[in-house]
Image (cartoon, rainbow, N blue to C red; front, side):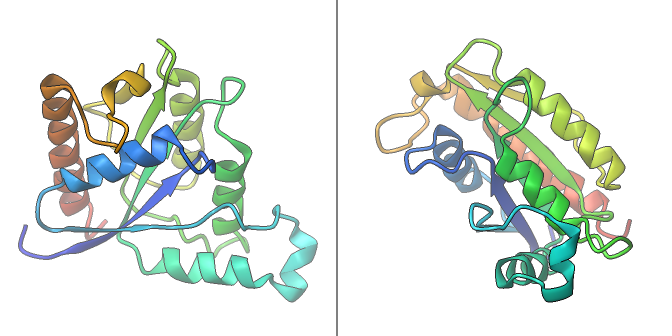
Length: 186
């Protein structure tokens, strides 16, 4: 890559010891040169309510301004009740408004879902994809990243313990870098 792309990392799990956050940190370390990452906070965003647009909460302004500067988005999320966590859906809603001023429009994206379970947050991955289609975000199709039994794939300090997993995740990050480069003028 001849230039550096600023990428937002949004993690759907808010808990302190989030496996998705640990995976996100491990995967961003595997990225090729040309991508720079910022983990963007979403847990402090007031729930979207159009009435608040009259006196926009500071957290919304911070979030929207940050997202406007990014050239791509990397989503990491667990699955809650066969969908995405409320905080992540709220971030999508806050960023998509006011109508016609979406911070998401045309930003290339990729989704990684991870869970200690065998289904690897498959439902969350596909629900998130549905929203990203509407938000006009070209989303990486292949390789897909459904990471099951993530609790067994990371060490206590968040290092990837399996060489095969590390190889796959490196391939994913290389594909995402190419995807961002490909959509830079979209």
